[in-house]
Length: 208
Image (cartoon, rainbow, N blue to C red):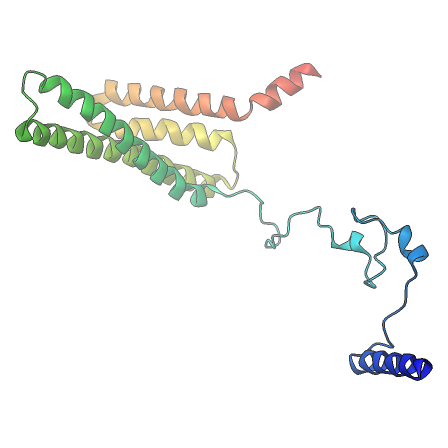
């Protein structure tokens, strides 16, 4: 009776194995499974006919067009730059407006007119600073993209040239002296930014 039941169960397992495309599940003994590591991906799995080492991805899984760079270009960074400058300007303008509002209304008692006046100052300062920094970021991005397309290269020369032209155009309504000051300010800021980006390369080359 026991032999028949064991044979029946074995036939049932074999039938299920053949039904799902296999010849039955292999029977591993405790001795065979004793040396199989529970962690790590170094050895062949006894349960899958796949070497787990091929499942480990050490490289990026992004599909890029032929010749494309893995870093974003100036056009892609322009949106982040403009938006970040607008948010930064609005935040700084809000704090500056709050400071100015509290200073200008310090002789007034806490009341609704004082709150409205402070709110108006905060709103004007926030919008003004956001507009200023957003305009500067827009000019810088436009000049950067145009210079990159004209030269066909992306390097620190584009950054410094775009910064200089942005400062000159932003102060173009202040006369020649204002244009010169704006250009020098843009050149200094863009030069400092380029120096910061290449600081590791400069210090590394000096060490060797």
